[in-house]
Image (cartoon, rainbow, N blue to C red; front, top):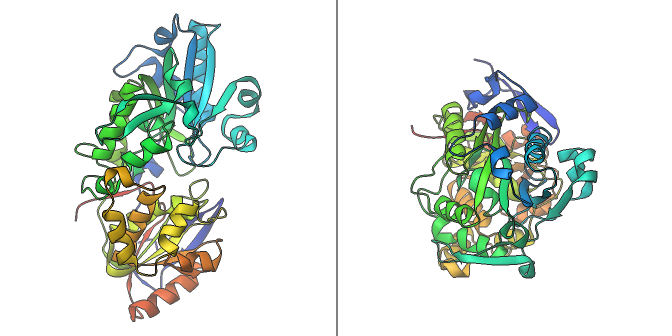
Length: 427
């Protein structure tokens, strides 16, 4: 068994030899060894020529004057450079004079900068296409579309609501409470108002046993999101699955529900792994751009949560050059020394009482109630400590600290090189 493991960390790799540890093994997705028949734009074009559950985009675009393409933001490693050009090409082949707007689905994240847009789409698209950035707190920019199954008001960006044709691009990965990313998530949370996102991400739903990685059926968060996508008339999506190099290895196009489901089935076949229950679980958030802050890093921690023993230690490797990622998220952890009390307070809130970033705090608290977390990052040590985690400057230091915490010089260790690409299921 190979005992040298490479962990993505920002745009670099941390390599570690576990020969001197009681190393149980690595949990990795088969995605990274999957060889697609086609690459890049050719892969996307083939999917678009064979849409699932809908006509081709060319047919959908005929006669449409106002077309809105929802695109992911800077926090997602979506290879938009290979997805968006063929979508624009097919639209313009059908309707050369269509008014096309690319709407950046920031959800509740900060605005995407021009530099980040260029890195994502390339300079040609940024300089020549109409790009608008969704701001979830701008209520004047929202349109009311009804009531979600959660009971919350469904309000989405006016630009999308007033489109003759609403389409989206994105990628599918395991998601720690929506089951999978992609598809319907372009609308909720992508271009929804903060009020709508808060209703969907309520404590009751986050606590639901079906609101977990890899689960769609019976997942109340997914049901809300799907309702929103249908109400918004999201007519067509192009979604890809990516490998560790952030390259597209699989693509689906077509109906927002049917095509997305097909992509999720493909992904499940490659990234489901059985747990290797250990005293220490080491994980990452897959490197840049997903490990820019602590907020996003909670995703990678959930993979370790599923394989570490109760009262064990999770070691999280995440650069976090942007710090905590949300003031509200930070303060929900930092302002109360008793994590059990913090969790009780969150669980006591009704669907209509959700506060910003509560869901991320709730999941991190759940993890912290299960295991200690040692955090290797570039974030300030005090910030890590304030959030009830233990800072470390290296994996070596983290392992030394973990052994002291466990009072065990020879604990068992499981490594998860990319915590956002695996679904740890079963026994």
